Image (tube, one colour):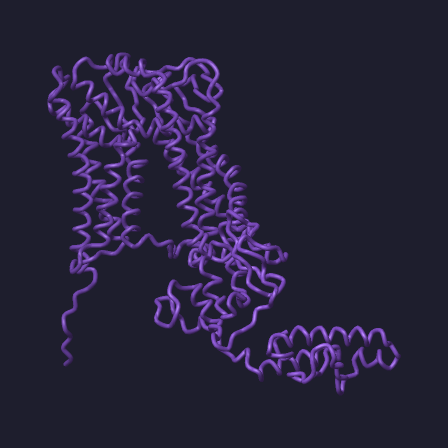
Length: 621
């Protein structure tokens, strides 16, 4: 009888890990709630005239903590007797709970070494369930306080916000991969995400969208700061009038600091042209203030523009955001350290810029929905930007300005090497001719590609290497080609010749020096396939073979004279090409003496020019 060893199933191993993940969610929620409760209790203790006891302070802390997650609150005790809703979420308060949830899910999905690790789905569900248990308890506890949570808002958006933060933590623990998608997603979308090219473009679009949102928020904060500076006296009066003791003023100051991101979003919406609502019948736009605003007395609301014409200079905020999106997209589309052939096409650049604009619009719409809301009933039922208009406006500004700007920036980064700081690496791989200076053959590939951003080498009329171009002096390198004397002296008219004492380096060294930082077989950038075969290009046999090939392909136009002529150049008559029936032979049969004389003179000039080298007519043509 076969005895089977006991096996521990995977589910039994993952059970402690799931319990640990559940406890992590509970601890994360408890830390956020406890920190806020301590702050509220400290303010309650320092207040000389508290309205309620410690139980009321703790219930108010639970309500404020739920408000940080997006839950709607209700104030039952009002002067009119009608419960008043409170829906404006202080965005700075939401940072703490979101970060704690993200961290708990990340640590649960990626535990310490040696500990059991749950699956990603299990970690996500356990952390979310543990956190929502504390949310339900806090909502039940705050029911009898001054700020009660609306039960309808606990499922949406509170549960959705907690699940999103937990999912982001699990995704971070997995290395932030862009795929694979779930099996229930469309097959075409799964195949697209599986491609590396798609992931690169999606990452570039997300980064550019994040930069665009950051610029929008920064521009909105700048607008608010400028407006508060102009109305500093009004803001000071509102701050001092809300509370007469230091405890109350500290509470007002903390609330104002928590609402600073909201004010930045209001300023961004103002710059986009849509403005923001100041009650049910008033709107502040760059065109001016429309209606009678029902503005409560608060320091940050002193930045609200008054009656009269608006400020169209606020339009610089979305323009700056669109240019930032275009710039960060083009940095990935046409990097400075890659050849022009590897840059994105203009269609890909425009497509990624559009995706970044779409992401910027979606993020702006979500943040605008959080930044605004009701502060009461009647005229106080609408405050802040309208999210379903702010998001499309951000997308329109970014797309209309960002796409043309991205295409222009791409053309600017890929412009001609002679007028640019960036050279065309593909064109720069042409080997330069040997330098005529001292005749030692030192104009090697390493000197030609010594600096990638100094421009490409050009050859002059005599075949010598020209001077490298600089982006600050694009006219340099043309004098040698035109035969002009440069600043260092007149151009050398003598052609360059190879020296037998100093043989040229292998052509492969040029490409090895270009691709790596250290040349040679011992360098870190050494690759065996970077070097080309070192054929005896300048040996006598190779020269004669090339000359014979050129002679055969010329159809009889090239003379067949010996490698080293015995008589002085200019006196020897060119020999008749043997075995050819080209145009020269037919011209001689027709008695064209003038054409034969021209051919003979051309051969003499060629013999004279090549005989001066010492290698004779066997030199490379």
